[in-house]
Image 1 (cartoon, rainbow, N blue to C red):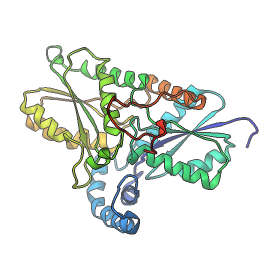
Image 2 (cartoon, rainbow, N blue to C red):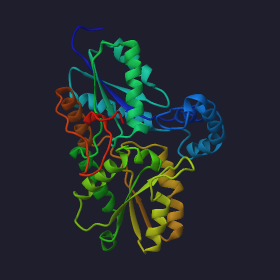
Image 3 (cartoon, rainbow, N blue to C red):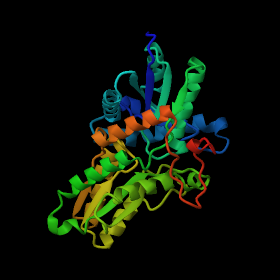
Image 4 (cartoon, rainbow, N blue to C red):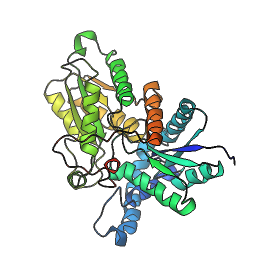
Amino acid sequence: MTNEALTAVVLMNLGGPDDLEAVEPFLFNIFNDRDMIQLPLGWLWQRRWAEMLAKRRAPESRANYERIGGRSPILEFTEAQARALEAELGPGYRCYVAMRAWHPFTEEAVDRLLADGATEVVALPLYPQRSRTTSYSSAAELRRVLARKAPHLPLREVCCWPEEPGFLDAWAREVRRTMEGIAPERRAAAHILFSAHGLPQSVVDKGDPYYVQTLASCRGVMDRLPPGTPWSLAFQSRATKVKWLEPATEHELERLAKAGVKDVVVVPIAFVTEHVETLFELDLLLKEPALAAGIEGYHRVPAPALAPELIGALAGLVRRCRAGTLPLCARPEGVKLKCACRGDGKV
């Protein structure tokens, strides 16, 4: 404990199983979260449904994790981001990792920051685009834990950062670097495919800002690339049978192959670290049929986890959050969204 001021920056992400035994409880935690999965009268029956669904899906999910080393690397990447951000922020700051669906859980992070004598907390989602299913769920849990354990500790929240210049700069640099690996005579015709985690269409229809903000991120990256570069946005990881955001990434890859596209540059625009959705879904599950369909060059851009531009952007967000000078989130004219940073909805 210390009497000096200490700002605790809580980096919030989903998390991932650290071994194969953790896969089923990790899935249960996702399916049982009523912000991530919204079921009618879920408070009555969602826990039982989550138990059954996690048990049913665990064998396939374990097999997926086996193909990427038997665990998720997301914690190692996020811990490295925390240390890099701490160094960028300098004295008076300490960074903590809080995962929503696996260790270290939010309560573990809060216990550590309280033991260190934190005098205020800044919540920093590692989801650039805001959604009830991701950043809101994590922030709501942090509020609940702090209200129970340290109700008088000041809490400030970064809402979202889909158009943060450093974030876009980091992705643009990684895209350019990846495209340099394409033969010069084919580079100009390469198609950039942004792939983001999907959401049920009903969630977006209720005012969730995720789709609009993801589109804004894509456009921000494209503004930093040569004019006329072809691109599109698709969505991966559909988890239920209801209508989800379209097109699905696998369908967009099929369309591009049929259109004669030879090189596809895949950009996981909604992620800033590698995990099962990049290492398995994009690198293995979707790549293999894309090549079979006629895509000759499948180039997946690595997530800019420790890119200096990204770490600098995160530091700037924290400082501006403390100063109360964060800009409002993306909201194109005529589009009605709910977003916490605008005070019109805790999305």
